[in-house]
Length: 273
Length: 273
Image (cartoon, rainbow over all chains, first blue to last red; front, side):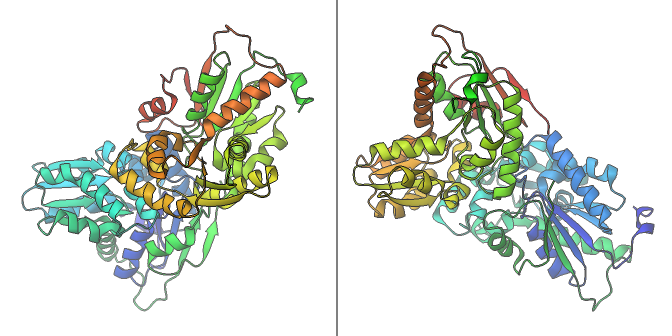
């Protein structure tokens, strides 16, 4: 990583990318944790969702976005999309001239630090779960941890419908989480950037004895540690700039995006591919 | 339309296209109604869903698919995707050298023929409903009809999850359909190719007094009438060939596709764009 860092400046922005708008939960966590950093966000809203596409297609798209952000002069790339991190991390790192961090690695580290019983649950999209990327990342850190995964394909559309505290979402979550809870995990990783918006409801369902790992917060913590370690943080008191690129401005983009981000989505640009 | 038809032969296949696999419900209805026709299907599974994209992006994708199928020598193009029909019919017709039929026109004709009270409900994706395409198509046929529309964004993911008769789907449908039922419609158009798979559940919710228009069946009926009128049907007794093109082979494609089609998905080809 050190040789990469010769080419970057403290004031360069952090590049965050996602298949759509879910990664804005990571941007929100970064803004809270690192309030002086400039951030460029890329959301591939024309081709979202990635979670149901093939590995080959996801890798192709991930490489296009990586090239775009590297050309914008970012100092660090954050893969906020669990699906891309799960299946395309190597493809992204291969062509990136700056360091690449991803939500799966961040979530895995948090889970390993938190679990006492060494029984960890993972919930995510089909592509993320079927890639076994969390299993690999966690076992690399601690091979004794038992992992139980569950796909939750309806959570993304439920969040995008805005049904964050709705009986339908509760029933769906109860059905998805039942098998994981039966395995008596003590830690549950929210392995998709949409899921932090369901955190209150999910915590109610799993109860107090299960700790939830919010991968957006884990990502922000890991980014902060990395920037500090290398002395690459933007100086305190800087006025940060935020810029957003998307490949399409779909139905209700602004309103949904602002729920994810927790603030206004200004300086928005559309890239047509 | 007549000048188009000089260039086509009875034995040429019918081209059916959709943003994903939903259009297979139209193929299934065509196979049942026109058992001697050759069919080529195109599903843009890498970029599905279209229902939440912008009009501009949908039109761009629709033109690409039109060119592809026209080059395959189809005698007729069927736009099985309500969203594409709603926002891109003109763009498709502009570059097609063969006649173009679409599900919205077919569904609108059926609704107008069925309603007695002239109060019609439409359910569909956000893009379809917000385009007002059904309203325009119905009012062109009968300006006195009152139309009440409702977007149902969760129906597509629920169908793809296979929850066709599930409590979550029932609750979701009750919530979506309540406003339309309060307007005392007597006919309800299922304005999305995924929805025929929910027909049994939806009929239970709306009761016997509301007639459902299955746009896949309406589409097959209109196609049959058009081929007969122009003497373009493939001769009886022909052994039909079915070929499927997709832009990606996503998670569970085969199993979900076969539920839609009601038979095996053989002769499948992947097109990388």
